[in-house]
Length: 574
View 1 (spheres, helix red, strand yellow):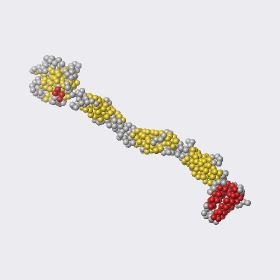
View 2: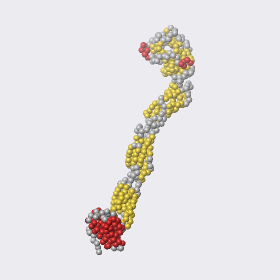
View 3: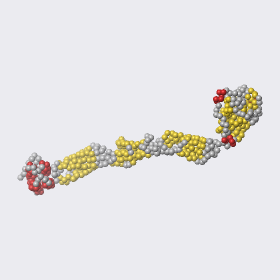
View 4: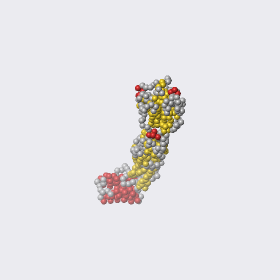
């Protein structure tokens, strides 16, 4: 760099004016109002000798801070020889070699000119102030963009041992030489009682909770000036301990599942300084809790099991649920259904598992299951009818038809049906495959008169049995004839004489049997049949009544062993 040319009592830079284009580079204008804190600031460092001046595009003066606080203004002995001037005044840290480092701690921009003559000190204000620390080196850096600035200095005298003068140009390295002066004339002003911003921290940068659970976060705050701090949140509720420092607790509302949201907290000291912190809140979905009402541990097969569904969710917004049911039997699918009410009927013994699925409006599902053991139920046996081959009487040697049935709620059961006719003959058996009901019949002929207990037994394939009994009276010939006599007396188409004639023959047969005379009894029966035939031919008996009487007498004759089926007319034996 060529040395500048001397001019008068000062030094004048060769670069006394700057291109018009440089005007466009200017930054924010210098504030003309002194900050409130400057009213209590104190002069810290100064060099006031103004024996000569320099006029360079870039100039600097380093200094050593004498106190800790906020540097809110510097005063420079300077003037603007060309009128309107644009310049920046900045505070930088100092590099290891003692020159300005380029790290700017604060700056201000000036546009205008100075009046009042040369060698006057003019204030340049910093708002906000620049924090400085006692016994630390800093640099006042002036960069002239348009016009010119004469900055006065101490010439050859080293009037300020805490720093020195530096000159440069845009893009050049710093240069110092006593021929350009030892120290620029300056003053620094520091406020030691300045307000500082509060501090605010959150313990958790991200909060994740399940739906229905209020999210919470905690943290701390402080204010270096002891100011009372107010903390506000963009959402939720915040409480704190202390006034100038302490802890805070934030609580958000319980909600349904939701995307991640950011919560902003702001701490305000009431004097224009704030601090902020943020954290995120994520609410994740939770499956509802499914509840089954009326879940018995066991139930007989064939008995419907009625179930009711309900569900709860930690989120108050979840009130509508969809319900579906699935039932397995011994591990295989058995029944399905929808809705809050459901029933199924075990069709056999086994292990049934009913599972309820409750789904909320967020498609989250919760399930509940219960196990019910289907127990076997014995089949129900029934003797429906006992029908003799002859009307009016039931005698030995006559075929008797037994009609029976069973029902079983276990529709998958197989069954074995057996009859015991009560006369010692082998019981008849028949088998039936899976099914809940069956009807059947069988015939049997008793060889002797008497009262017989007929038993129908139905066994299922699980070892349970149903049984029923009917009493059958096989009449003696005398009992049968008495029953026929009673029937004759009830026929309305016969007159008294005709009735008495027929019943007399029946009574004579009874008497003969009482004497042991079967032949005489049979003769009376044949005589009875002949008279019935005659009465029927004369229209005194209906064909139905005649047939019933005939068949009944044949049954008695069969029991006596004297019935001849080949004869259509009955002879009287001697």
